[in-house]
Amino acid sequence: METAERLGSSAVVLDNRGEGHTGYGSSKCVHRKVDAFLLYGTLPPDGSSCGSDHDTE
Image 1 (cartoon, helix red, strand yellow):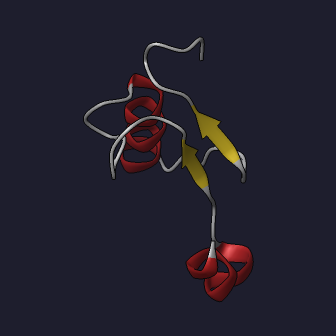
Image 2 (tube, one colour):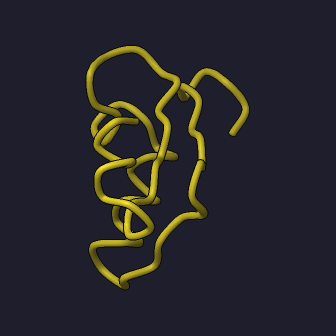
């Protein structure tokens, strides 16, 4: 969160509540949200959260 605070209003936080350091390869929810940003520039709402693939998204 410190990084988000330093970036100010331009920061968007996507919380990955799954196991591991990153969620892109292990969470379909994170994968979809990151791809939407990289491919289309669509940001998730600030404070968005993704659970593990074993949880309901």
